[in-house]
Amino acid sequence: MEIRYHGHATFELADADTSVLIDPFLTGNPKASIGADALNPSAILVTHGHGDHVADVVPIARRTGAPVLAIVELAAEFGEQQGVDARDINLGGTVSFDWGWVKMVPAWHTSTTPKGTVNTPAGLLVNFKGVVVYHLGDTALFSDLRLVGKRAPIDYALMCIGGHYTMDRFDAVDACELVGAKTVIPCHYNTFPAIEADAEAFKADVESATGSAVVVLAPGESHSA
Image (cartoon, rainbow, N blue to C red; front, side, top):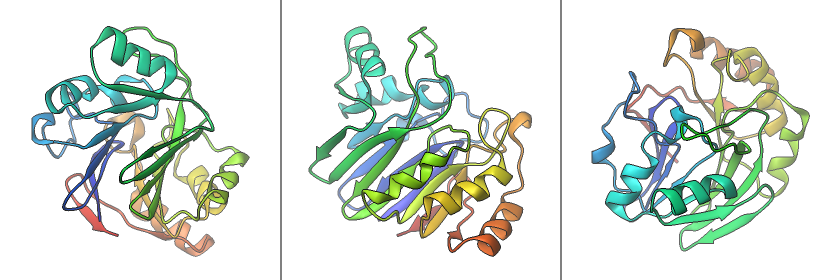
């Protein structure tokens, strides 16, 4: 399985048969590594409704027929208003797929879609064919992050570090200690000037303070799990 980083908070979990796309923001993303038309996911997962996480959800879902998993208010907007195959879920819920399962967990943030739908932000714990990946979504540091890995030990945490709209790289070191993932991949940084961050300094701080390894990916790069 490969974890592909497409820039900002957009990731793809993929093997030869299946592709799961998380928070597709490619159109309008100055650091995007690929165009939305080049992706053909088996499913799309959404952490929350801000434009820099949902920009390409509907065009990709309509083109490919991929189901979209999102919290209930977002699923209603995607399905009822925009005609995609939307599957709803809420905090604490788990949905099974033929490739694994997804559990929705809390995140501390805000969220309103470009169309005005208010929704609750979340993180996603994803079991992709036995590899457990935790996409924290957009979040501040909060103590309940330590509870997420009790469901299943976390192999990879995809973690925001950019500050300003989310926790910064210093709070993210504490988040790494709480989450306890084997490997952390930073995201949600350097897309815009307001969220510039030093990922290599983050890596050094995490690896000196915790038992987690950090893999820094540039947009377009992949990590083999």
